[in-house]
Image (cartoon, rainbow, N blue to C red):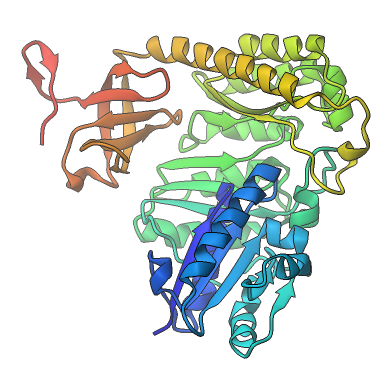
Length: 441
């Protein structure tokens, strides 16, 4: 049987799309391999949000092309493929095919054409495409990503996503419920709903509040998450559904991008600083103990030191549990490329260092305060380093604990015994040794 290797970069949506590609190709008899040197077809599923991500992919493609087997196929998929299209074929002669997020259904034909010597690209948007008849090949039976919405109708001046993902469209609620019900029957207990602006979900009859209640009420779904929401798309109905859906985890990733209302206006975000803080307050009233994480860009064109200080102060006011922080990355064809007053790279870099220090300091203070507290964790697998297991709390905190492989995929109550500032060490509850809770096998 032919072997397929897929390497994924970028967000959770790309992870979900890689699972779809595997589903499409499995129907054609392909089997998955983790070794690109043994693969008949190698696909790199890409991100285009920042230039650095694209350069990393190009470097990796350069490595993979040396592993290409005689008669093998090397393809680039995803957002970078959508953005560059046939230009990628010109840029890297060893690439055989280029396919955007709406073209995965056609992969078998594209591969066949590549094997016949035709280098081709499919980057057409298909507003109807939800891949409803394609069963994804997921790697984790306990936790699953479920795409509920594709594309984006917002036009933030810095963002390439509308050009790589197309217009926003939502799946029918019944189709989402059917998929999650099947997952739960198969042993999945944690589901993450995915969308570019997931809380703007609207299938024409049902909104995001309906979606949360319906999926959160499916038997077997113990934990429900979603990402990434848009701050001002949290309606009163959605906030009420969050408060009243027990399965919903107490964590929201709430991108802010900047703490300056002036910069937010230049970014064409649909809120200002005060409105964002109102949303934070509403979420905290509705979901006590909620953990908040965010995305922040520094060095956006025209950002002054005063604007940056407003970002630092917002980080302090909100007290984020963590943040993904970036220097502004100029993306071809986005409106921000026409803005004046670029911020020098050295200035942006220095601001990023200060922001990272502030975020880490706040996160560390919050995490130190949690040492000694007890939490339920879903044991996800072995930690990347050492002999410990890795578990995750409902608030998205990562804890490392000792235990057998039999615990993987299950839930354990643990006590936090220490923190590095970002992750925790923990012991399972249940036994006492020398006056302290001890790890048991």
